[in-house]
Length: 250
Length: 246
Figure 1: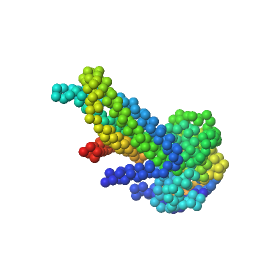
Figure 2 (figure 1 turned 135 degrees about the vertical axis):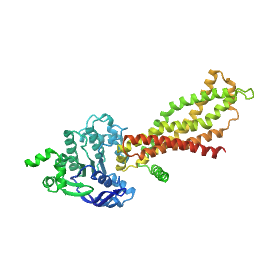
Figure 3 (figure 1 turned 60 degrees about the horizontal axis):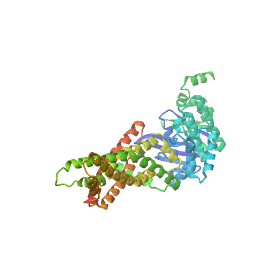
Figure 4 (figure 1 turned 45 degrees about the vertical axis):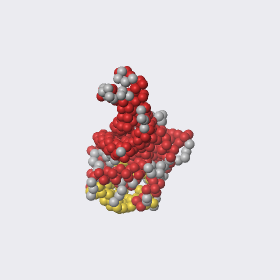
């Protein structure tokens, strides 16, 4: 479980996040949604320590991340897996080497054990026969799957996904979404997904936080978000004609 | 005031780069990888430039030493001292600042803008240590080898082209390159090459590491890395020459 309490962040005097609190539950797919520029990615970067927060507290299963020194923060970071928007795979390494990399850095596994683990993770994300390809030789959807395999290789307790289906076709998006959901439940991970794709929210969202102009504007479940009367949330959820039509029908 | 900001940030990056490695065996293999990329990969360009510079210095010296008062073996002395004192350590380092420096800045800059450095940090890896430290060590270890290689090829190039052009005899050239030879000059060149190697690797790495934006900024970081490292090489060339030879 990850708790954030009263988080605020500003860049050059400009407030980007204001007093945000939320509890991200273990074994659930927690979604952070909002318009582009609302502060979603900044919040995620603050939570993993890539950005320093100005105020507030971040607790990983009760351990205050913000109060820890660099050495102890590193220990928590080893429990984090992250799926970046563009995959962030290492260009100079093959698919298999990308998945093996965290194992080489943090475990004393033998070469064959590392290869077995990498193959298991790649099979888990349904990526076969791509071990020796470089990131530049695979599609966007495959890159995301390799990034998921790399993230789960070290059996993380927390999984962060920054717009996991951006740039993917609807079919591949659903595959990636379902993969995240399955992995979350299978390994009992605390998963946080940033998205502005309502299909993903409806498909896999357990708990949802809506951010509007740097503030937490709404929270609830996917059933609740479809019925809410909150104007900003409605504007976001029913932004497309398809969703508007859906609302009128039901 | 911005210069102090950059100095401070540069030294903090270097401090982080020399922090305790997560796994020594991986860092050692990274150093060998970098030696292969930055060092072995530069042998060709260093060889070509050194041979031709040695040849040009030989022909130019012979042309300028036409007076009967100056012995012809002075050509060998001029080639030897030009190569050892200045060309091999300083000019080769300037060329490497262009070739290796732009490669380091663009590689690390691309890793920054494509979030690969963030990925390393989130894994709990000291990204400065993993990326910058092996490049600095590889450069510092391999640059003196390149400089000695350049000295040898420059003097050899001068000999071959001097013979072919008929501007100096075999005996005079060899007598010239051994005449009043001071081994300290080689030591001076090696000290310079180590300092320059540190600059060649660390300054472009700094510019690459703090790139923000996209492809355009990666290009800008690469240019900045090359320009600043070249200026620093020239400045330290002057300082070290004053300290070691004056």
